[in-house]
Amino acid sequence: MKLIDSHAHLTFKELAGSIDSVLQRSIAAGVIQCITIGTDTEQNEQVIAAISKYENLFGTVGIHPHYASDISISDINKAKEFAKHKNIVAIGETGLDFHYNLSKQTDQKILFVNLLEIAAERKLPAVIHSRDAFGETMEIIDRFKDGLPKVVFHCWGGTAEQTKIVLDKGFYISFTGVVTFKNADQTREAAKIVPLEKMMLETDCPYMSPEPLRKQKINEPALLVYTAQKIAELKQMPLEKFADEVTKTTKKFFSLP
Image (tube, rainbow, N blue to C red; front, side):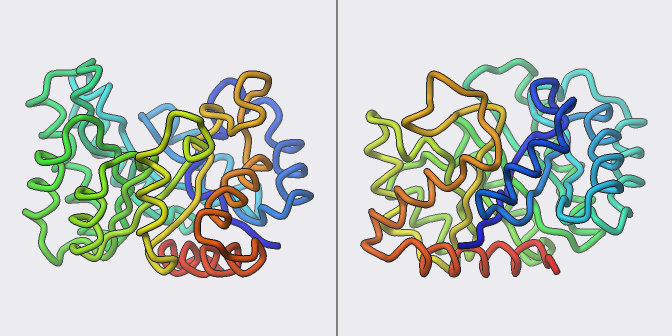
């Protein structure tokens, strides 16, 4: 079985000091490649360093909406430069978070547009963070029409109706270990209707460890297998076949070797 973790934060403090062993466990578990995600300028720099060192690690350049009110033109310009690295495979994460509202909504929208402009300019896919802002997120993406090569909504937990809207646009959807949580019926229903050619899997580590390890362990790519097992079960598919299909989708989305 081969899987790809499409959204990990290996440069966050919980994992940054042990990337060697994290990736060793990942490979042993069948997770053959990982995408480590940028969330601000400092993290983007660390992503570049990590993907320059490990051959099975690829990265994205992004600025999380939480930080939108603190961003300067210098941060945007640095993101443009970071995006030129050969192993940067997408822009993100980027989007809108109206749940916590840690930055002004107007600032979040401006930052979102700035980063989607980089994605369009570099012809890179966009990795979207959207929380309690679905309509506003879709409206901004729609402004770019065909300017964005591909779009994925990460850590999906939307309704069946929202899921269908995203799929109708031709976008991709990525699921975390939340799909294993007892109270995540909505997420499981969404997973049932997303076709494998539009589905990816992620840990979003170090957060959201899947059941049965939710309370005991910092999440890491090796635990992606629990998410794969759950969705294969929902799809009533053999795990190997399911893993092969979503791995093909992920390689295609990020243009991975």
